[in-house]
Length: 136
Image 1 (spheres, helix red, strand yellow):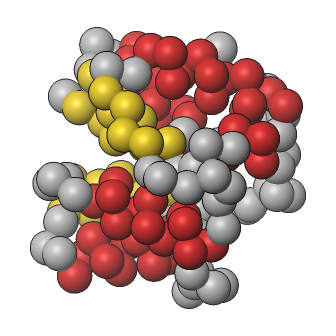
Image 2 (cartoon, rainbow, N blue to C red):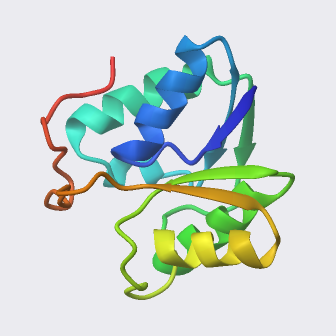
């Protein structure tokens, strides 16, 4: 199993850790050279640990992320994918580079998409996880 992740806060990092814990290979996409600086401190630390465990690292040629850069990273994430797991509340996109956009693009590419969103779940504030715990 090969999991591909941009190692963003929350579900992206959880996914990457699960892939590694199950013995899979992690392919990390570095969205921008300074992407880690945009993460909340607990996620910044786990970003470095996960990146260090990645078997393959694809670095995009950008210094700092933006919505347009996230959209490009999402397209890179879909390259070669045959299955996508999306943690998504089903809401329409609010600008570019978000989950709704990458789910739609995956479906347009005929990639099998599984959406996970538990009944009763709610989004946490930006930069704060539901339990405020870093990924070990």
